[in-house]
Length: 258
Image (cartoon, rainbow, N blue to C red):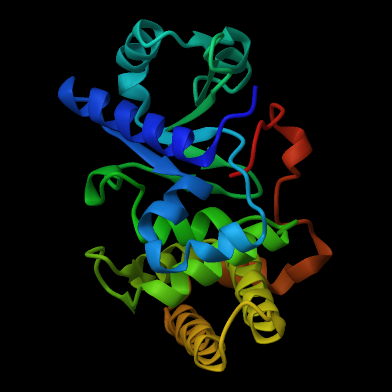
C-alpha cells in the first residue's frame, strides 16, 4: 500500500496537534520538516521524485511515556527493542493498517555527530528550529544529494542570523562548532559540498545559485570567526589522522531518511 505525500503531511500535522493538546512538545524533522518550512522551494524535492518513507519527530525523553500512550491510542505499535538498544533515545512505531512508520528522536539526534534538543524544541513549531534543521543535514559525513537539496532549500528561503525567528541561528551553529572540532570538520566540509552542488544544479536559476553561494560563504565566515575552545585547538592538531565522526553502522539500524 503506497502512502502519498499529502497523507504523510496530514498525519504529521495531526499528531503534532494531538501532542500539543496533551502538553507534549513534538516537532517535525527530516524531509517533511524541510517541505513545511521551505514552501517556496519544495518543488526541488518534487523534482527529485522525492518520496517520504516515514515521519520523523523530535521530542524530550521526559515525555517518552506520554508519547507512547498517545501514539498507542492513535493505533501505532512500537518496536520496544529499538528503545532499549538506543538507551532510551529513540522510539520506532508503525501503524498496522496504514503502514505509516514513525521515528521519534528523544533528547538528541545521534548519527555521525550528536545534536542535542535541550531547551531548543520550544523555539519553533511545528518543526525543529532552523539551526537544528541545518545541523541535521550538515552533521552527516556520508552526505547524499537529497541531504544537499534539503540544505539548498533551507539556505534559499531563510536568512542567517543570531536568532531563531524564521532565521537560521548561525550564531548557535558557530558556537557548537567552536567547542567540537569533529563537528566543525564535518559541517564546514559539507557546506562546501552544498556550494559546489548548487553551482552545478540545473534546478536553480543563476540568482538562486548566487544566493546559496552567498549564504554558504556567510555561514563559513561566521563559523571560522567564532573563538575556539582549548579542546577544539588540541583536537585540531591531530586533524584527520584520527577519525572524528561516528559510523552510522555503529548505531541501531536507521529506517527512512533523516
